[in-house]
Image 1: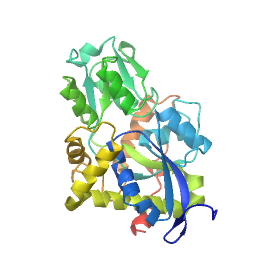
Image 2: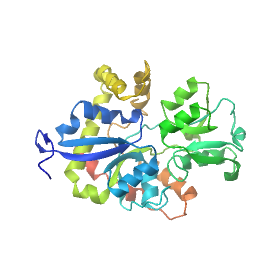
Image 3: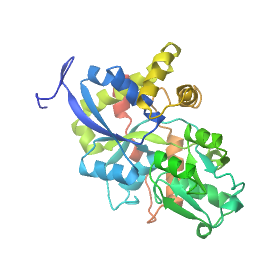
Image 4: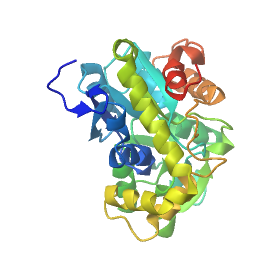
Length: 320
């Protein structure tokens, strides 16, 4: 490792680029940066915001970024050549969970009051072939709509979709908190949630290319250790005032009370970000079931364990 890199408390610092979608689910990353947890584990982290999953996975494929916070479905899709972009990341792997265990909501414009009202309308997705687009397709089918009765349009990541919905450009889209609540405050409807389709679903995960991670195992373990320590710190009640300040410093145009609202969802003990970072195997099974049904081109997928590697998390948390 180059000695020209900045120094940490125990020696040279490894530098990585982390590519993430904008949003409050990056709170553990903000805490790890603000409180120096990455530096304590000899890592310098450059955070890049992605406008969408195609940009994110192209960056991972090229090596422009080494670690991503992304949907579990993207890990499977880009590994199995079912992604939106003509990019294959054949060693993509998920290392830990970094998302709430709550289900996304289908938010629609005020005029849309039923699934039937969505006939002939256009709904926004991050990417048509990956991510929550498959969840939305399943919900629409369950709601009585055929695939030729509506249109899905690629509109980008959550911020881009939220802003487009706020402008009335789409009839609906899937959102997690706090974006579903923000739209509800504008008079939009929560038509349904993915819980009507799924009881378990693995959302955002920390993902890498396995070949790179195996070559940089101490660095990856240090990164996960910093993130898990940040999550534990966020769950501690005595840290909330400082945590809210960190949230507001990292959130564009944060409104009064936004941090408290986001915290109540992201760090709810029963449904928030899992404090142990464990990936929900049943949730991955549901991801694979949706991808088997709707993924293109059709492909026989592997077992959930083929797309996850828990050894990095186990080492980071002492559970080996």
